[in-house]
Amino acid sequence: MDSPVTPLVASPVLPAALPGWTLPRGREPDKIAAAFAAGIVLKSLDDFVRPAPIWVGCWRARQALKCAAVSVRLMGRNEDEAALRDAVLLTAAGGDPGPAGRVFLATKRLSTRKPAFSSKVVGELADLLGLVWDDRLAAAVDQADDALQSGRPAPLAAADLVSAIHAARRDAEARDVVESFHESKSSVDLEAWIERATKSLVASFANGVIRDRAAIQNAITSQWSNGQTEGQITKLKLIKRERDEHPTFPFVIEAAR
Image (cartoon, rainbow, N blue to C red):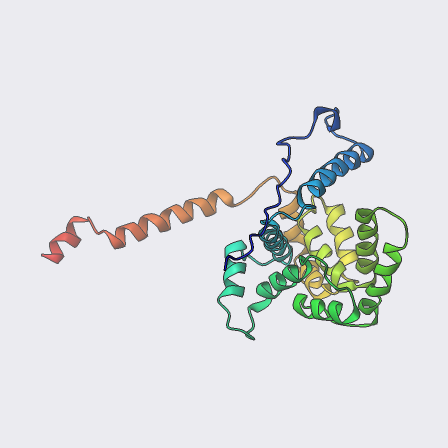
């Protein structure tokens, strides 16, 4: 008996580049032009995946991996996509893939076709992402319903939801505080960062910055650096290491004889 043949769904052809009339003409587009171009991109992507071609599952899995890699990098970790994949695939069933691996599991869960959105699901995702479950996070379910019923376009409704959750959770703000530390370019920026950080969950880190305020401020504002000195020291260490591994001095050769 012959097995039934599953018909293949023809995938639409996605243009290699956006039409010229969709692109901003200025060097720095304004918000309206950027939003218009983003809308065209989303429409093209929707047309591309809506017929559910046979490869769409792989595509969703790939997007989940990329999202996890970005999230892990924002957390200050150094796992790349390969490390995230190994953390999940090389862990026995029921085992703990580690913090980075759990982030990948969370993004895989979110990449499913129609993920259920309930308090239980949000709680499971919070556990994978290492977030403390509380009433404010539980309210995300109601906030999602409000966003869906707001009548705003889905991307804007999602942005509203993220903003609401971010405002309600200080641990979400803490990540933003840590990231903004690297953007300090002047003593004024540093003082503003210290004032903000001392009121967040990274207050202990901010106190350490306060103790070393002078050194950190000099590192930010001064044009001078000890990089040249450190570079010369590294070069000398390299020469010494090569000498020890491959002795060529006459007295060493003579001693070996």
